[in-house]
Image (tube, rainbow, N blue to C red):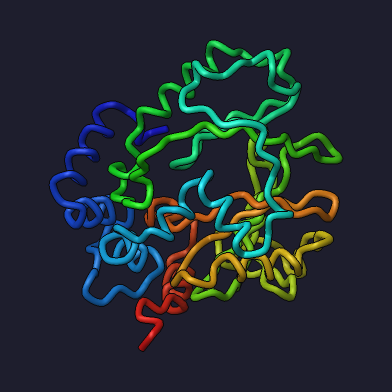
Length: 296
């Protein structure tokens, strides 16, 4: 990925270390080609930058829930233990992994940051030395400094080995990303075809399973376009609301296969708060739903 070039990473590390505020201002202008308004943030991405500086830093619950391992305890506390994907084992480093003891299908992922997942549908075809190198490289990335995301400044980095989610057609499961505003799950982004050779599709739907033209693909979809509503979708909206209750904004990610729900993760800064995949009017619309002072 572009941001992982050594020069780019070094620049971002230095910028965030010197001044997180300067970092978010600089990156916002690079990605959005306009000045960031931190005094009166209006769009979702502007409010995410504000929360990086004023809400996420030293917020113990946000730090816990941004950790893909420690969030499991939070999910249990919310009464949703049954939607956790079974955890096979954890490791501190890639060289601790005993590949012979792993099942034939599994998923490996670090507990921090985004990307870097190893989805293995057939261990006999896995290039283990290359996988170890990739895991080692990912471990060294300082995600909290790339885009001034303090919730990723973990004391303990872990590799999680989870159960492989089987699908009927053998493809990657559909990723359902719920946009939650002050504890209310408003929209779900259906991500179809991720992790395949095909170009993935992204469509927003509301609770009534009506297409919402909130991104480029949705806006370009023909009149009357829809997708089959999966069994268990209404329950996913409820799960997302339970998990998002304490937060002004969070994206709650799940998988749903054969009617069974699997928790994915909680994401507080989608795209680092520089998401150019949304339409500008959607960024403003979403931003209007985020109350940065819920007690007032």
